[in-house]
Length: 481
Image (cartoon, rainbow, N blue to C red; front, top):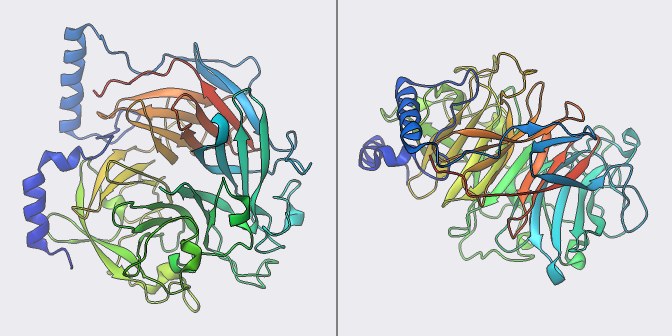
């Protein structure tokens, strides 16, 4: 049923400020050059007064970052890291080196107290273009010409590590998403057709990888029902069964999709590979503001707490046989955004990242947004808005959010993929930010930020050359304010 203007206006009025504070993070406008309204500044002034009165009893974050003598990862005092995998250094069970270009990652509780991680490798193009592509393990290969895929990493309590291939022969495995039934959905951020750029099969799909059952990964099958385009991330609504997917593309900007399952379909291990290619309905969003006006691009939002109502339009040809999926809609039909990246399902909805917007977007330039989609209200609320970072090489400024996770200690943890210095940083529910780590090795982005199932360890990747680290230390609940 379409969300009409009267319904949206009534809903917005009834919810009031509650919509602004939906989910875990209310607003993030504390980075240098952040876009902040007068109300935001008043809130921060009130907060400063409250902190002074309380004697700042609730400390934010974990203190300043300390340079790493090894020149890899700067962390707060009391924290340590350990390298889990390192491309060209550590080896798989089969003897080949760990593949390059670590990206999206998820954790799972493994047998006998182990932690299992599925790690994407964002390798594009033919295998000869990379020194360490994902090995073509028998039975796990989709396209033998493609260099990407996933590995499964098993971390034991005694510190030993094992790694093996989960899927091979896919392309540009960027982000993805963890399912509630314990599997990983890996997304191809590349939509080459068979015969293009050396590929022998069509790409641009989502695949399911089971970290616990190696047999379930044999004979990889794309989930064509989710569409063929430059996928970034995916989450599944565990209550309604809808899948939400992001697209990182430009000219025109990409889309945020919803897949509605066919009637009677139930999710579970191995169920997605049983779907027909045209099962369910793939849809794109059409946003309206509180005045009922169409919003063509999410960069139009310049105020934290902006709320848009969302309608969904069916995609005519989800496989993009003649026309790319995002190009099947006219300029006044759907709402787009630049660099739609990571997602995380929590608080009954999906957190969605748009890394930045510049001249290719019609609204205001920014260096990062995080939106929260509430499926019950059918609204998108702007939670995070970073202004353009004037000096990315200056430590302490944050820009270009990419992978995100909801922290068991409150708020979000965000991986930077911006210009200059690269960080992992946290954000509280009131939007106050604090550093967690800094890449002291090079200027490569952080990826794959995720906590272990028990919350004791934060895993993250330095994408180039491809290093997975495990960070431990005196984690504590962060103040909500």
